[in-house]
Amino acid sequence: MKALGEFEVWFLTGSQDLYGEETLRQVAENSKKIAAGLDGSESIPVRVVWKPVVRNPEAILAACIEASATDKCVGVIAWMHTFSPAKMWIAGLRALAKPLLHLHTQFNRDLPWTEIDMDFMNLNQAAHGDREFAHIEARLGLARKTVAGHWQEAGVHARIGTWSRAACGLYEAKHLKLARFGDNMRNVAVTEGDKVSAQMQFGVAVNGFSVSDLGDAARAVSDRKVDELVEVYEASYDIVPSLRAGGANREALREAARIEIALREFMAAGGYGAITDTFENLDGLKQLPGIAAQRLMADGYGFGAEGDWKTAVMVRLVKVMARGLPGGTSFMEDYTYHFDPAGPKVLGAHMLEVCPTISDKKVSCEIHPLSIGGKSDPVRLVFDAGSGPAIVAALMDMGDRFRIVVTEIDLVPPDKPMAKLPVGRAVWKPRPDLATAAETWLMAGGSHHTVLTRAIGAEAIADFAEMAGVEFLLIDADTTVAGFKKELRWNEAYYHLARGLR
Image (cartoon, rainbow, N blue to C red):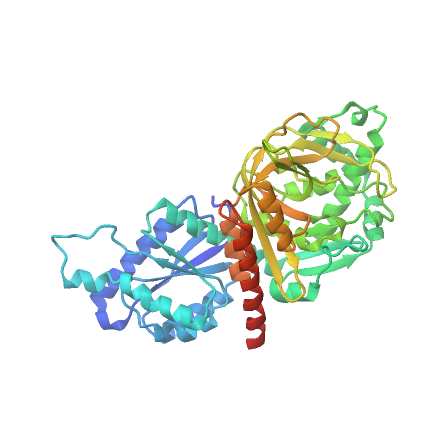
């Protein structure tokens, strides 16, 4: 079963009537085999659906309109088996409202050196047929991904799989509803943003609710449901003694369960895929949602603390893109640094809400005081993140446009146990190094809230940004401060020019 098997990408093959029915039958047969091969790849999480070969402008336009109108179709793969005059594609490509991937491949891997003749050459013309197609893509200024290589190569499958995950993320963005309980943390800049612009850009609808709505819902939760969820907690986590039956803080665990049930029921009833809350607005709640937010993220919901709806959106989109992949994804915050010259590192955490999917071990369920918020001590899950390559990503509203910044990192174990830090936490080494990564992140205006994911890499986020028409900046092993500064300046000029042309 494919991880995102409810979605499809359509495989369109270009040709023309010039070649005659025999050749076109062979084109169709070959393209069916390619589509079937891609559909059977474990690296591609969606269905790849073959569509009849398009041979004229009318068929191309009809196929593109149908793909755009079909909800479960999240993107189109186009390949020119033969030469397909690109003027035929203009109307269709202009009508296409789904992400486009141009696959530059050919049916045969090897040339039949001793057998090759002009019939073979006429049939297998992707080398210049795709160049004709690419010219009109460029002439039209289309956002698209180009993948070159033989269709049976694992690397080609992986890149198509990455693009298809990004396309599913874009689909989710266009359908996502986010519930904000309370406003964002007062006087904070980066958690603000233009929600109307976000809906115009991505499709996400951001709606506000009073925390008292959640408080009322929590008080209405039955004791039976609370008992059932507490049993799940006990089976899933290492519960500290004070939270166990008969423990001094048992009621706090039950209250945490009550809040989680209320949140789940509220979101299910309204069709919400992401939430935010803030410790500055807890009217009607006895404690700030800790384990509730963590468990909701573990089930794929988006979350942002202090009203940070943009990060909540990104958490949800990355959760969708990463479905079926190991490693986990979480809301995260760059908290503090270890500046030891022998191994500079970042300690990422948050006061409560870090997703346990980024841990490789069974986590602990604990209760500790929270020095802000003025409520009862909240229950939370405590753990260390696993090790290995990962990324942190942030979505910001820059006033005139949205910007996504990604840093490639390597998660590492903490140098020593952090027994007195009772939260989910992660330690990492940014690429290329802490100083360069921090300076360039600050130059980009990157936020302190991020999405940390071990499941997908920077290419998926870059593909999503391309599809959504959003600025994308990458900090990786090759980044330099001087080069990054130039990129920022070039981008500033580009986006001002692009706006002026609209």
